[in-house]
Length: 397
Image (cartoon, rainbow, N blue to C red):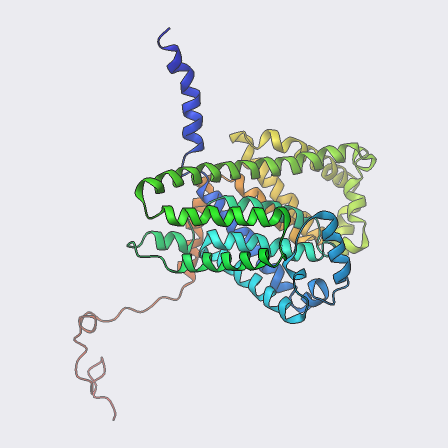
C-alpha cells in the first residue's frame, strides 16, 4: 500500500511536466506569429489606396454608426477616440510598423500587445468590409498575446543569444505604453472591462521586467510564463477545432449540403467568382461537385477527431490547406483562407517546421550571389604596391 501514492502521483507529475515544458510548441507559436503578421501586413498594404474609404473618418460606415455599434457591443476602437484625418493616418502607419516588427520578432511581448489593439481597432471601426477571416484573426491575435512567439525565428531570440547587456529599449517601450494607458484612463477615453484587461496585461509584464533582475524570481516567472504559453496554444487548438466542427455540423443541417449541391451554390454567387471560367469548369461536372460537397463536410466534422492522431493529422492538414487554397482562389476569399491556414499552423509537427526552415535557408543561400574570394596574399594584407594591379601590370595614373 505504501507504493500506491507514488503510482497515483505519476499521472499528475507527467501532466505538470507537460504543462511546464519550456520547449513545447515554440516553433508552432513562431509560425503563427509570422503568418499572422505577414497576413495583416499584406492586408494593410493592399488596401492602402482605399484605406480612407474603408476605415477613415469619411468611410461609408460613418463615425456615428460605428460609435453606436461599439456602444451596443461594448468593444473599442482606437480610431474612434479622436476624429480627423491626421489621427487616422498616424494610426494606420503605426499598424503597418507594428505588423512589420512582429513579423521579424522585434520586442514580441510589446508588439503582440500592440498588434492586438491594431487588429481590434481597425476591425471594430468597420466590421462590414472584411469577410469571416477577421473573426478568426481576432481570436488568434488574442491567444498570441499569451504565447511566447519570439523564442525562435526572431530578432529577440538572436539578441538573447548574445552576451547579456542592460536592456534599455524594452523598459522605455513599456513605460511609454503605461503613460498612454494612464492618459486614456484618466481622461475617461478608455473605460470598462477593456481598460482593466489592458492594465492587467501591462502590470503583468512590468512585474516580469522587474523580476528579471532577481534569479529566484526570474525562475518562478519563467515557469508561470511557460504554463500560460502552453495553455494559450491548447486554447487556440480547441478554438480551431470548434470552428471546423461548428461549420461542419451546420452544413449537415442544410438541404444544399445534404443533396450534394452546396459547393455548386457557393460557387454560383456572382460577387464571389474572380475566375468565372474556372468556376464554370468545376460546376459543370456533377460528380466533382458532389465529391467536393461531401468531402468538405466529412473533413470539417472529422477534423477535431483526427487531428490529434499522428497518422491522420498530416493528411488532414494537407487536405485542409488544399481546401482553403481552393476557397481563396475560386471564391476570392483570400484573407479568410490565409487566416485559417495560419491558425492551422499550430498543428504542424516540429520536424516539418524545422525542415521547412532549413529548406528556406538553403534556398536563400542558393539565390544569394556568390562573392569571389580574394587572393591569399591580398587577404593577408599583401596586396602589393598601390601603383600595381593584382596582375602585376603597372596601373595607369
